[in-house]
Amino acid sequence: RWNNFWFGEALENKKGPGANGGRGQGKITYHITSGCRAVFALTRRNGDPEDYIFGKCIVEKSHEVSGTLYPQHGFWPKNVKVKGGLQPVPEKDGDLIQQFKNAFGLARQKETGTSWVIPFVPPAMNKDTLVKCFVTDFFTTIMLGRLTLNVCGEEINAHNVREVVEKYKIT
Image (cartoon, rainbow, N blue to C red; front, top):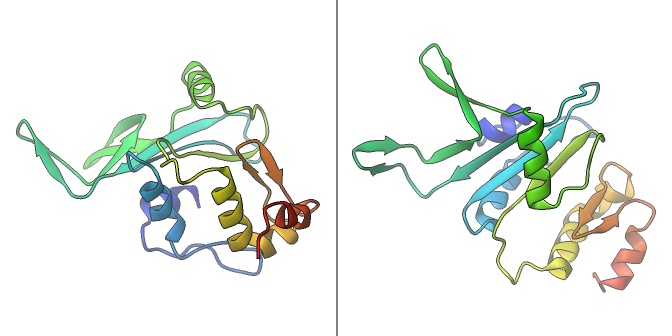
């Protein structure tokens, strides 16, 4: 799923009764929400002691700067040479990852999962708006215990989602 999120636009890869999403709306929504059209992720896979970071920026179109052609998609932090060109790959350097965590205020240490960073979110996209949108769109998934969210420091899970609905007057 990780690879398909970053490189598989318009591909459906989530199937079955426990699958969430799958139509690709999240991929573009994250980028559009960012004021610089960029998304970063910190992830740790089940059974893997390593953290990885990766990022992607989608600009409006391919462009040329000083005679060099750049594609619509840019990736961070590094590329490795493969047959036929360069392949963007996640970074696992501990120092860089700690700098990334510090820069974006990520508290997660050894837990598995993915933390998403969407920089330069417009002021209208505040905590109340985010909570209302997430709970409205993912209420069933949260209630079933398949999704736990942390929105600006407030955890939303199967145990408290009804209280969150009341607190934020979500209809």
